[in-house]
Length: 201
Length: 201
Image (cartoon, rainbow over all chains, first blue to last red; front, side):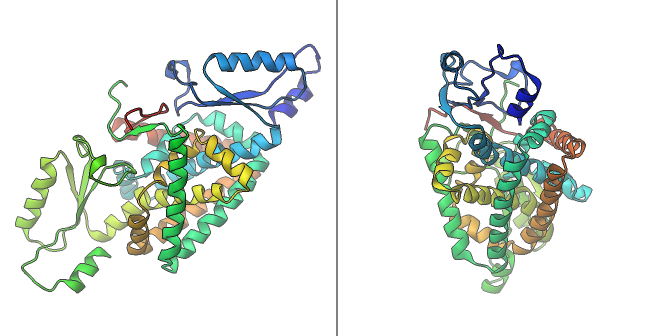
């Protein structure tokens, strides 16, 4: 992990390290893709590795000043939450785009052409920085493999339901997940998607 | 399939049926979520089951009049393309949101709270109409199971790469998928996502 790497490398006790990161952004990397409200009302997670409250307060003030809500958690818990909210969705997005481009050429071109039908959302994630994500999977391997296992089991349950034509199970599952979306919208964390092209590009 | 159902049910040869549907829309159902440009520059797929060119032309004119580009394909091919562009991404979205809500309560609440980190894109799809999707999986079972198999194999390859710390393979995969996103943007089929909330709701 980042914390283990820090402890192994930095022996100078005058250097204070407080791991923290915002949960905000788009698939685009680089300062040119920032905008003034990027961090407003979004969460920033800090995972303190020492109890120096002065350091913690300085970092908190920095993030709060740009509009963020601070949450504190221990590193191991952080890794599991982020595996589920971020690292697994990202991996799945990469995976399905890979599946699409390994199809026979004719089908592959059509998948890209008709991407508006759901596939498009996955390509957005799959457009993120390859180096950053390579390192994420290396540094948060255990939690990623744990959550990936859970996902694979749940997908296999849905696969069986389709094979057995268990329409009741499918409908119930889809109703439950729909409620999650509503909750996220109510919490003001849904963002907004517009199927039209962004002309500002 | 829809076509088989039609043939079995409707014996009146005066009734002409031309299956066609737009690839456009959002996760919201109902006329109130339409807008004037919803179909502009999007594709409409027609899968003719007879060769009555008058019928085909009438339907083509209808879709063209609201701004759509028409594509013709046979039904079996349509089912495979749509399984990949639409039905599998949708199923995966449902599946990962299910995985998240089956986590222990504490973790589940946090996954929802911190959804901005990738998970959010999946919840958007998972907010779609449960009845419609239940029927899609029932009606396009074969192609869905075929594509799901391919996806599961590719995900397992990525899982092994993470377990074995094969950073080169991960990085190469992520670079390749990034190109697909660029292509979709260049084709004008990417739509636009804004991480800020849509205040119009």
